[in-house]
Amino acid sequence: MVKTDTPKNESLFEAPPMGEQERMVEAILFATADPVTITELTGRMPHGCDPAEAIAHLRKRYEGRGVNVVKVGDAWAIRTAGDLGFLMQKETVETRKLSRAAIETLAIVAYHQPVTRAEIEEIRGVGVSRGTIDQLIELEWIRFGRRKMTPGRPVTFVVTQGFLDHFGLENARDLPGLKELRSAGLLENRPPPGAQVLGETDDHDDDDDQSELFED
Image 1 (cartoon, rainbow, N blue to C red):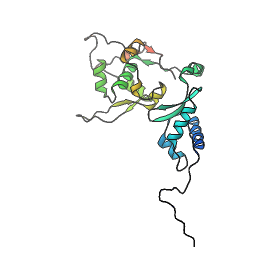
Image 2: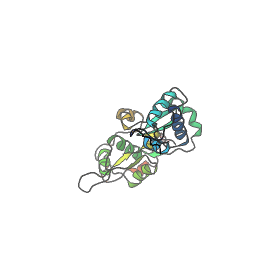
Image 3: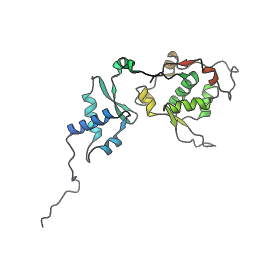
Image 4: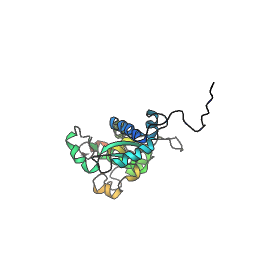
């Protein structure tokens, strides 16, 4: 009987060459609509692969191309180059209209996350209806965060990876400033104090004041 010694740090299986790992990552990102994390890539690829390194090589190879490898939150995706987005406009089949209340609520969550409903109402100066929150959750642009360690343990809201992906952001720190949002019409100064009472919702006044800035 012949005995062979295998070094403890040596894998029994040799990982594919990096060029082949790039092809694997490219295939996964191309075939997956949602961004994919390094952990998910590791689980799909053969033992010993280094998807993080493969991503770095792939991202460099796609620089300046019609599609790019982009980071979305803690995940990765293949997306149309930002300067060519206008070519995709004909594929837009549905425009989702958001009320002014929904737009302001979304902006507050993005800039103040994690934030509770009471904190949203305090910032806006008016109440927020459950329908507004439900609409943003249904769009998968906000989600429930951790409960706050305060009396009552209220739930908080945070923006989702889908929100970042929709607006081409790597993380919430890439959001434009409040001044830019106001100039773009996404935020407006509230009416003078007394015009509306905190605790009442203003969402019913927004049915005829909807924005088409958010498109699918």
